[in-house]
Length: 442
Image (cartoon, rainbow, N blue to C red; front, side, top):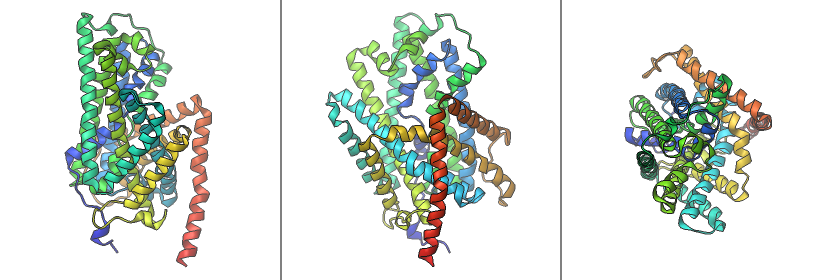
């Protein structure tokens, strides 16, 4: 029996909105800080640009796989839905347990705090206002999304354009500084050879910075003509992100040089300060604040749809599974996710939670792409969109993700171990929840 029309989502997102969600979900605060880490682990500017290009192509492969999955099952919930259909309710619950209840709100808390940090630095506010501003940002984003996906998309589009504007300013700064130096600073130093193993170690933070493309699939139930729009938006959005990332790193290298970038703690602010002085650093702090705010908007919207789908499946409280008949927004799920993110923000415990769920997040990506093989084998209907290069493209992405997980476990065994413990704790919770549901239902 299908649900009544008033309890379902409305397809209101076009290609532009969907592409902005992809861009906004990937570009957060990382691109303004992570490049220094990559430069520190490499021996030349060319190696930096090659790594960002490789990372972008690998992530694009994953996005194209998610495009087929979204076209096959254009429903809210994304990876949760794919895992439920392919592997059953337990793996789907473990995904929701790890991501929607821990990783998503932890990410929101962390990035909202980053937003407040940079906003206070830009406006000269005292640091004691960081937590109130972070809480206010989360509450404001939840409040806007309560009015429906169009209001949330409007907010996201504005901040996606602002973060693209910040990137454009960085590109201009790099060109100006390169012109002043009469050449690109990063081509003037001799390259240092990089051992094969070091390439992979430098690729890890690149891949983490490209993460977040899956949020659009969480919102697939509200995308118009999803079989056509999802592949277009994911392909265009990730291509745009890769172009931005490579160009921004070129700007860092042009203005700071490879050695300067490797030694910098805040390359974006330093680049702007070299160009415009203290005023430039202030403007960049505002740009990073806008970029962080936009990411929070997408993470809250996407995470709430996963929670709502779990509630509708009986895998979470039934009230969370309701969709408001007037706004067609999962209002209870939005409020629940927002409230938990605020608790994490005030407690300051989000840092450890994110560290502990990193492996779980990448494992979810691998399992999500893995469902593509199940759909190709068992789904009777023809796919409206088929990822090119199957099975090699999804295999390349899954293999890379597994390598990332292994490398993370070697580099930080404690964090990886805790991540697996958190996932495993979901197993007794799942069976306890099913037992309670049977008792209540019986």
